[in-house]
Structures are given as structure tokens and as C-alpha cells.
Length: 550
Image 1 (tube, helix red, strand yellow):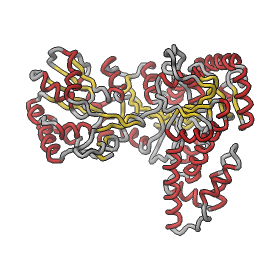
Image 2 (tube, helix red, strand yellow):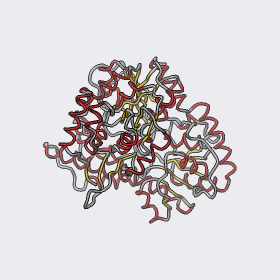
Image 3 (tube, rainbow, N blue to C red):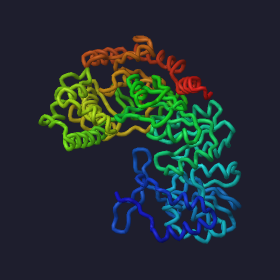
Image 4 (cartoon, rainbow, N blue to C red):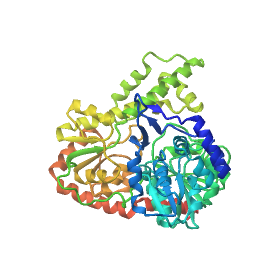
């Protein structure tokens, strides 16, 4: 795939026309911006444009007929909001269909606005005011909107928080929610249930100046983020915003803050990360387990002839892609160590360390083995901000463990849903079922499996995964890998069943496949416990109480 580069001369001409109407917005569209989420497929005449939606690339082009069809329900409006510009097809169609209407074209993404400006001759419409552009939090200036709304069919999946603003308006109690993927919408929904108007805050694709502009325009009383992004503490301090951060994913990088952090509260799913954040300068840090959102994770009617039934299933990443990326980072850190005069590593260092780890599947030994084989290397890499080489290489060991665990249960009909890396289990008799969407499909798998497996990351033995809470919320039975905190959250044998070794896992799989009614009773009690104590609402209430932001 190729980067999508707008025509520079056309873009400069149309930005000049925009500047005559809105000089500040034109200046903002000149700021640096990320373009990695937009690509053109190779073709002799210029292939179709695709957009990265989560982990998938989807076609973004609509075509003129599809764009015109989007206008059909709206009669003859005097004002039109194009909600999501995309490549500009719906905006162009609205200008052509309704020559007397004022069209407001909004998008969260400055790169899409640039691309659309370069693709369409909107100079005259901008100069006369028939067309007005709006970027990110500029949407607030047009609310409430009581006329026609033309939504982009692809980007509507991205703009859920802005859609809630259109539908429900903007209140005085506002929270900025840092955009992202996993769990962001769940926390945003919980904030809305607590009376907040939730405004999206894009911090990864926008320039620093644009981030600050959107924070000022939002007039929020707090910010929230899933996982910590470098610089968030400083950005929130500059904006005068207290920040709550719920860390839900593993990371190999150290979080560091510059200056005071009395305005930041970090809640991490991994008790081992508390000290890591404190060492990085964060004052308010505590362990807080993950949870489920019963509004999205719940049992429900299954479609007829559904394909989700399984005796033993696993849903999640094979970790192979991450392992390859992190192995490349490991090799780079090792090259840097050597180039800067560090002691020479033993021959075949990664292979030796991984071979040792394979002999001890129940313990994470990679970091310890690296320290013994090459003293000082791991600490030097962490100090240089390169990340922890033990975790970089540990991802490979963790992926191997996950794949081998499922293959070891192939005789019981084990199946896996997830990325393409799972195809490897078919060599050992396992079955790969393809990707599972984050919506109802996962719910169907969890409630249709006799046993759902939970397999932790080898280097994260102390956490209770989100999978455990979600399977139980869907009414499914989960065999969860043991961790000290699991039995603090659930009553063992009554609400949850755990496994400690491959032999233990195999014995329990055999038992519960032979006694599905016992598994169903445990699953029922586990779901009751999740609803009582372990929902996103419960966790948000705790975060707001601790931070004093409720």
C-alpha cells in the first residue's frame, strides 16, 4: 500500500480560500499531522483509498452514486451537516444537490480535511460561505444541530462520542476522553451514566497546538484515558485538567512524567506496574483490576444455525505479530548496546534465553536469564528509553506458550478465534476459526462454548485478564489461569475455576466437558459476582472517589 499524498498546489489554493473565511482553521490545517491511517492500494491508474479502522483496512471511497444516495432522506434542507468528511464525496454531493443550502463539513481528522480539499474544487463555496469546514472540537460551535445530518457510513463507526453529542446535546459537566480502541467507548459510556458530557480528545494524530486548542474549546472539568500516552500529564497540566488513567494493556515502555503530577491518578491492572509509575514520577498510583461492561457483554439470543459452538475455545491475540515487532526492537537495542561499547553478547543470545524459558513454562525467566548472560544490558536499555528487552523477547515466549496451550487441547476439540497467527495451531490438530468482531460475535462465542480458556501473558502472571470478566458477563464458563488476585475477586470453585499447570488444565477440561451442568452453575454464580462487584461502572466510581472528581 502507498501513502496518500494530496496535490500540493490544489491544497495550497483551497487553504487560501479557507483562510479568507476562517484564518485560524486554515492555520490549524497547516500543522503537522499523522497520515499513517490512510493508504492507496497499488494500481496502474491509482488504486482505491483504504482507511485503517481498528486493526483492519476498509475501503473509504464512496463513489458519486453512493454519496448521492446518502442525501435521499433529507428533502430540501437549508442547512446540512456532513458528519465525517472522508474523501469529500458527501460534501460535494450536498453542494450539488442543494445549491441554496449552507453545508457544514465536519471531521475529527485534519488529514482527511486536507485530502478532501485537494480532491474537490470548493474554493468558490468557501469564499461565499456556502461551505464551512469544522475540525474536531469545532463541532461544539454548531450544537445543538436541528437540521439535516449526512453521516459518512465508514467514519460513523469512529465518531461514536461525537454522535452522542449530536443526539443528546452538551451539558455543563464535561469530561475529555482520550480517543483509542479497546475499552475507550466503555469508559465513555460509564462517564455519561454518571452525568458527564463526554468529548473526544485526539492526542496521537493531532499536533501539540491542536491538542491544546481542543482542550480549551471543550471547557471540560477533567480528562480520562485508557492507558497512558507519553506527554499526557504535561498536556493536562498545561490545560488545567485533572486526569484519570486506567491502564488495561501491557507495555514494555517506562512511563515518565516531567514536573508535578498531583493532578494525575493512575489505576493499573498490573500490581507490578505500581512501582514502575511511581519511579517515573507519578504521585497517585494504585492497582485496580479490570472489569466488564454488562451493557455490551451479556448473554442474548443466538442466531439460528449459528457457527459459534465449541467444546473448548480461546478468543484473543496469538501475539505472534507483536512478538515479531518486539523482536526487531530487541535486536535494535542489542546493536545499540554493542555499538556504545557494551560487553559482547554470547553467541545466539536470544535463542539460548528462549530455549531456557521453554524448559520452565510456569515461570517467566527471560529477564533473569538476560541479566545473567549480559549484565547491564537490560537496565541500560530501560534507562535510555528504549523499553525493557526482557519484555521484548518475552513476547515471543508468551506467544509460544499461548499457541502451545491451545494445541495441547486439540484432542478435546480446541478452537481459537483471533489473528492469522493462530493458523499455526492447525499443524498440531487445533482449529482456527478466523477473527472475532468486538461486538456480539464475541458474546456468542463465549456463551456457546462449553469451556472458554484464559491464558495469560507469560510475563504477566499477577493479573486477572479482561477475558475472565467478559466471559462471565456473557454467562460463559471460563477456565482461568491462576493468579494471586483471581481468588481475591472470585470465590474459587464456586464462582471461578483456575488452572496452574498443563496437567491441571487437561484434567479440568476433561472433568467439565463430562459435567457441563456443573460448569453452567459455576458460570451463573460467576456472572452474578461480576454484576455485583466487577463492572466498568464500579471501577469508574472508585476512580472518581479516589481522585475527588465525582
